[in-house]
Image (cartoon, rainbow, N blue to C red; front, side, top):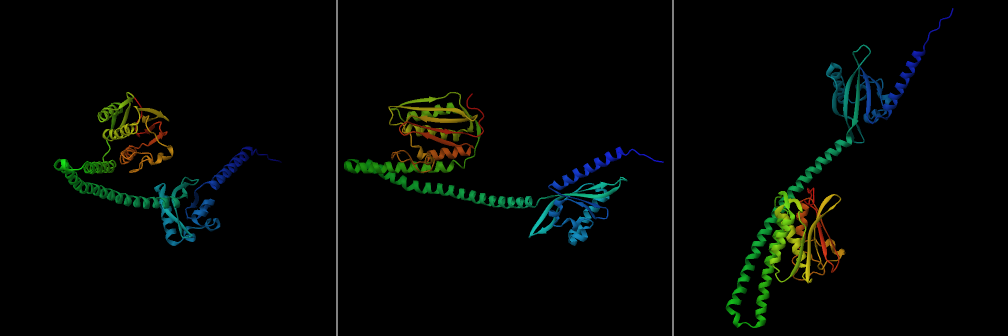
Length: 388
């Protein structure tokens, strides 16, 4: 007698089970986290290769062993307590634990433990997954340390700025007082002794008075430059075209004998602090007037364009221009270009403009050609359109 049983489905099931186990093994092999399974007695039934590294133990030291047989007493007790909480039905448990010490480095891990039911539906195993966060914790500690140092430096810088500002005001007051006295003496000499002075002496008195006035203007420029980084910023929509027209009209009154052709585009708007933006235009347009003095007709253009989809404003002139090799020096405080004339100012105007633009989150740059004029470009972060 012979009995034949069809085991095709069983073989298919066994094959699928084998394939599933292979996929699981491959997944665990490449998983960038430690993974393990313990039975209810706390013995390791499975551990992947990453568990070797994070536990600082070889697999033969783990499999079939309990935590008490593998780890120091304190660590083993903590691991066992967490397992018991999971087995008691508290669901998933997440902790940060120091799993091992290696080469004086503590390996810290974010550990997730959860219950795995057996065939009878009762909890039979405790599974764990741990992600090594040692470098992350070290990075966080370093960031905390650096933030602390940065806060200290910021406080020190704030204090230094306040002291510098107080010094500027004190110095300006102390300098102005003797300058004003000298100016009064010069005026008194001119009024009381004018007829008794030789022409050469009159010239000396006038030069002394002019020098005093220039020193006063220098003090004003110094204070203005120091205050541009301290005033509070109030952004609003500003009609830059109208503001440029006002600035041009005011400046034109100071040069009634010159021919100046202002070309100011219509409808240009910007999002900026109105008072600070006026200082920008005062300096840039005033600078253009200064360096077009040699032209029979000065041409000064104020407008805007788009670069990479963002608004860029400019002031262009047909004046003396400059050599591009000196472009980096344009915005250095109290520094003037090699071809600058003695009465061209103190070298703080463009530095003030740069500081204001930077406070708005923008940038400023210039292009020029000797004897063919210059163009100053600037951006103001937050602008979405160039013109209405």
